[in-house]
Image 1: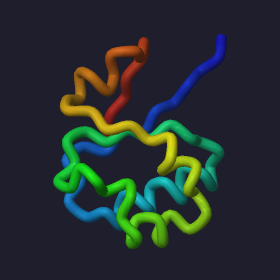
Image 2: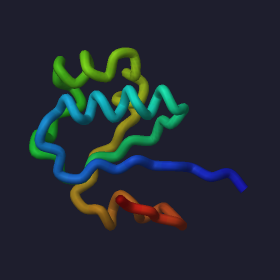
Image 3: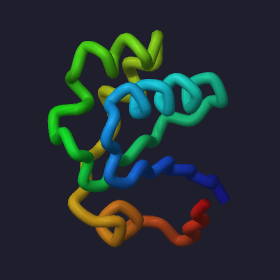
Length: 82
């Protein structure tokens, strides 16, 4: 069984946090980033975000934006949160 891990950020207010999360994900070998209702719907394309991602552009490019947490986890079998 292949386990797929999705990192979900909810209601992000500062784009730099999205970039930092993408960079950390890439460092650890993860690629599936989802944003739920970010304050800025164009956050993934902001210069500061791409800068902070520092080489994790592929994570940002493949990230998805959802309107609800339910939508973001709809295709998941196991969900853990902190």
